[in-house]
Amino acid sequence: MRRLADDVARARVARLATVDRDGRPHLVPIVFALVGDTLYSAVDAKPKRSRTLRRIENARERPDVTVLVDRYDEDWTQLWWVRIRGRARVLDEGDEAAAALEALGAKYAQYRAEPPGLPVLAIDVEDWRPWSAS
Image (tube, rainbow, N blue to C red):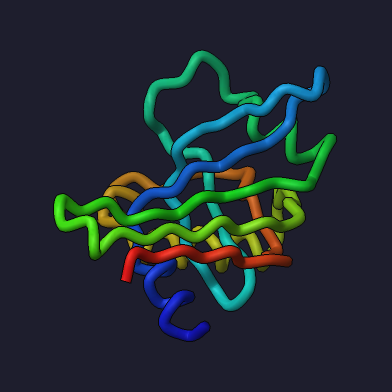
């Protein structure tokens, strides 16, 4: 399990699935930092239609979420993915949010150059479902 967590922690991108108020899946790519059994993602400065993001509002209303982290390679023996299910919390302030932003900055140079703001999405991991070709 330690190697799996290390592979996930090193991954550069994941896909976050939330559920909207009509019960439809909402899927978006995210960058993240894994700290212990919590995965953190923040709202960065890339252009968006609104600062009120559907993923954040969905997580506030329906905190059961799924994150898919994967590695693609032309050598299909190197393929792997991990489906992470968890409970989301939206951090609008506080020490945990500050620590999450610090962890994201340590992982991504873009966040060091232009730090993301609040809120931070914290996902407490409840279940890991891995698959690998090897």
